[in-house]
Amino acid sequence: MLSEMKHPARTLTLALTLASMACAFTPASSSAAETSGNPIVKGWYADPEGIVFGKQYWVYPTYSAPYGEQVYFDAFSSTDLVKWKKHSKVLELDRIDWANRALWAPSVIEKDGKYYIFFSANDIQNDNQVGGIGVAVANKPQGPFKDYLGKPLVGKFYHGAQPIDAYVFHDDDDSYYLIYGGWGHCNIAKLNDKFDGFIPFENGETFRSITPEGYVEGPFMFRRGGKYYFMWSEGGWTGPDYRVAYAMSDSINGPFKRIDTVLKQDPAIATGAGHHSVIHNKESDSWYIVYHRRPLGETDGNHRVTCIDKMEFDEDGKIKPVKLTNEGVAADPLK
Image 1 (cartoon, helix red, strand yellow):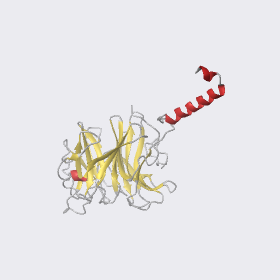
Image 2 (cartoon, one colour):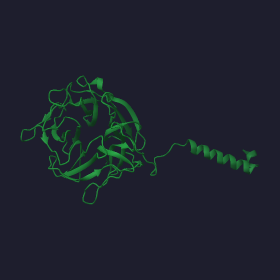
Image 3 (spheres, helix red, strand yellow):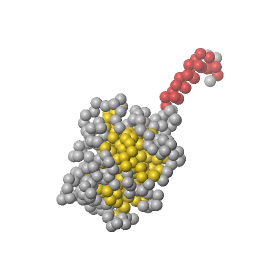
Image 4 (tube, helix red, strand yellow):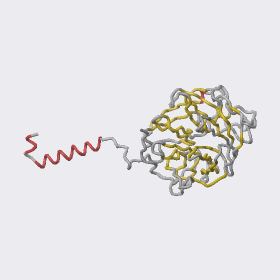
């Protein structure tokens, strides 16, 4: 060290070299300038369900592929929305005895220390076929999930709704509801304590239609400021017109009158933006919309990617139109 002090130029060169090396090997920090990027993970994934479990964000998407290959679910976890860890094959088709054709549109909820994943399987077209909405259970959010009932939870058509695209809503009174439906119809049903059946409504019906104008599929619900926000997808899932609309009501049963489109394609960014979910960080009171979209120039209907962007509200509580970005969102750690 003393000999280096006799040669200032050499000392400066060495110092700059060491500083450069330090920068090269220092991990990126979660700063306000760092973002998740869109898509948030590599690969073809659609219908993402986003939720917070403890101190982690979780996203459970459909593995977006032809039905013959759509036979498992991967999951992704993050502590800050920016860096995501993949959990492979948390549920596989061969763990569901009654399912033989495709898994998609998962919805995951925690209850009494157990994690339940509700999913669509077999794409049934009538009441004579086996399939519909199933349930699997695990001890951890990363699974492995195993079939819970040995049969579909909902395996018939009610009010014209194909039994697909389940979403489980946990209300403030600790009630749990299954909201689901394809083919332009949406039903709500109150789950029993064991998640193996339903509690009929006061009028005796088990499945109640809450279908709003324009509804196609992909329902989602959350509560904010005493209001129920009901969201859904419209248009064709393989086309550029796929989009998300919403309604608000004082009651979980509606009526839900369509207010506006909040998510749609941006010809400069991506097409076919839809089938979403919403994540709320209660600590920062930040809201995020997790959704899939199709990269520009992509024509294969199964080639969809999972993305995340900010979701904001105006002073009247209405949802502002979401801006699609390539940057995604900044780090928002769960503390």
